[in-house]
Picture 1 (cartoon, each protein chain N blue to C red):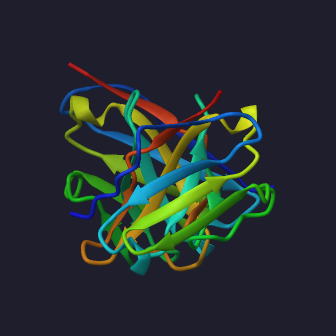
Picture 2: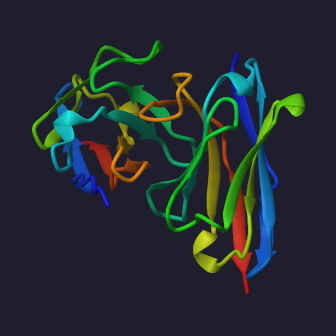
Picture 3: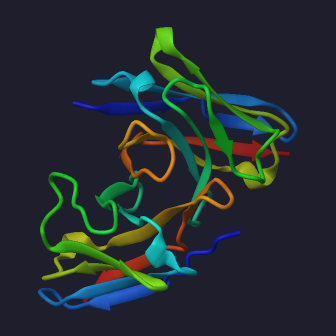
Length: 122
Length: 108
């Protein structure tokens, strides 16, 4: 049974950094593109970025490029989202999701984690 | 940037049909995916590649895509279908995934 679990959320001060991770059971993450999506309270879904199955290609939303970085740890079967210079607008539930196909673009997200809440407070 | 527009809300009586539209410039040339999200839960994929259903999704859910509008149709609506629904595409001109604005489906 495929399961994705995010961790690392919490309360962080404006301007500080936070790293959230996505761990998997029932599948090997390095076989799939992995995607990060966030949802601010009461708002819709917002794609943040994606990483290819082998980590060689990454795509980021324009508004977070340069502040957010996605990386893989193949040995731990995890994917992480490093977030720097956090601001209030970054307050959201952060989801990782698995791409349905091996390619990271134009694919559907067929498994999602339960999400981890990041609150940026001044 | 590419924009996907959905109606904020759609309602339907039980056993009737609910249609959720997703408007975008020449969206018919793109591949559309649809997600269902219930309160406090993660999104669930209900339609991929415009009209394919993942295993476990009832046949009552169907999708189409043509011209400037993609449509998710829920036939024989049930109380359990109450949720927010989002469309999604990959915009190759910006290398971005784009989600629609979301539609809240209410069962009357």
